[in-house]
Length: 329
Ligand code: A2R
Image (cartoon, rainbow, N blue to C red; front, top):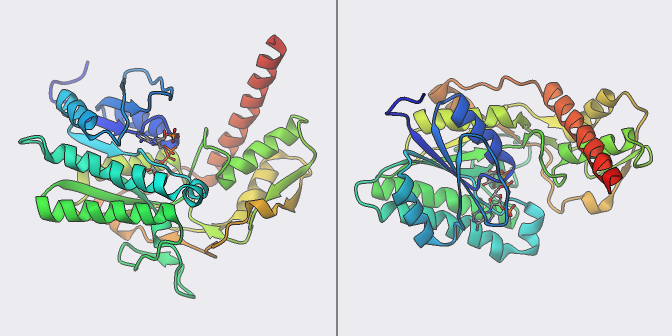
């Protein structure tokens, strides 16, 4: 039984990769009464959470939902989050990521005597091209976004800061570095490698993993640690401030791949697939998480090896289920 003064949390864009993990964390660990939104065509089913359809671009609908629920905390996850899609469709990316964020901020502003905590989820991609020799980035490091997605997230961050300073709104901006876990789409390297490895182990493909640039070094964190940081930042993050969320360490994509191949126990070769190369790959980036740790006490708890092992098992199970479905006809 929940106490009368239980906080209400709303996750906008909850049907994506992070949304389910965040919903479970808010519901179970923080005892929040949790409300979720999804697009009409999406599916989401998390016990104990009420689900609504919402297109973030429809400000009137955002306003009326906020009036109905009156959440104390709003986690804004809704986004066009693919860098590749952002090159192909920068206008859609800009609409969803910038205008969508403005729909939310303006909807909140339009409601009298309403001042929820708002978390705007941005990305480590905002930092973009770093000066030679720089790989560790703090929130003070100048940003040079290097793709349309990163530009839109930088704009969201600036609007968040502006609205917090100008209107006294309780907005915290986050720059999340690479987060990984079960159910991630294969457009991300770790999920892609786990999927390919699972296909090899299931006899669905030859013993070769196709890769992009393996030398790039990135900062990986388990998505469950990431959503724990979001919960802490909703409670303790300072208004108008930006927080990096990452492990603070970088590892090469090559090491990530080796770890997955080792976990598989199989002899697997790799082959460069030019289609997986990105035009402006940044050699190394990792998050300075001093500010996050100082203000919240957060630290990552789940080792990368455990995350990768669970991701591989998840992909193997998915293939097993696909086979069962196929055999049922
Ligand atoms: O594009 P879809 O069909 O996958 O739907 C995404 C949804 N979304 C929207 N929601 C409401 N109104 C819209 N106009 C709209 N357009 C897209 O937001 C998807 O279900 C969700 C975002 O989830 P993901 O793309 O899986 O992102 P993820 O990995 O959960 O990252 C959460 C946040 C995003 O803001 C990222 O840019 C950031 O963390 O790194």
